[in-house]
Length: 449
Image (tube, rainbow, N blue to C red; front, side, top):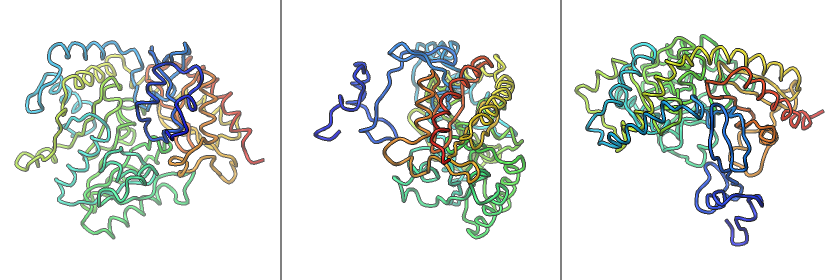
């Protein structure tokens, strides 16, 4: 804060003590601190959470697209507590039952011959591990990723991120190269044309690229679903040039797409897969990087030169094992597919009623609403530069209007991100859509007419 600005200037008059303390002593993430106004959350149940002022909200974005199990997964909470009493931490040179059994479970639910896992504490660390493994395995250094992507905030993962938040960290780690995306609504290239571009990039780079890194379904940069043949062809292209395919499933994993993983939607087994978020249902910080048998075998007699103090943390792995078991026992994957179909229909109804909705897209319970001020010219309200600029946008105002209607929906640049907890019901969807129906009047009113 500046010398002339105080906490009182940027918080509402009825701010709680916790909100005031947080504002003064804790950094708000990805933000100008003068604009941060934290809201105190006091609890959650199912697909809803409550704030300190007594209000309740439908969690239509699953917080940061991670609360896949909702806010009352007692089985996961109990598993954490039980492990804390049995042994809260042991060095990664030891093993525990949750770590070993979670490794076995991930080999079971991931596609193809993905079989051996390195455990970390977040999605960004899972991506860092994927990058290092690809480089160690191939002996090459370059990584091709895409412009509309987010892979994390640490040095390597922010370097391969295309999202404009990477600009503050550049030049970053050497060897990160960006490619175009399968973004039919807002790009001059058709989705499959962007593949030809990547093919040519790999040819021109020669035998120097370790891996192509993609989100099977792009998450916070727009919920971009490629054509059915895109990911299989991308794997072929990568392998033709001696590169691996890394799929970042941090957002798209664990039922979010109506399948276990986004890769499953396209029937593709990547060489390396990174995951987090839904891995523990966000009940504990946990990331994982799983590789195929061939890559695992490579390190039998080559050093696996990577590790963390908290690699395979017992509490986090206990949460992960309980979470994956919950997805299975509660049959949440097919449920997400079924309710996702219903959600798709309701969002299409919103598009028909609101001219500012340029496009709705997604799969399962992983969907986006892209807004436009001119649907004929596809003119967005928000731009990539807005993500690193001060002030609010029309898209922010739509989210704020939804909040006033009891619906929490996040947004990124020009897209409302809809990724609710998997247990959401059709009645919950109807209630949330009613709130969005009111909120979208804000963007309708702001259109060029």
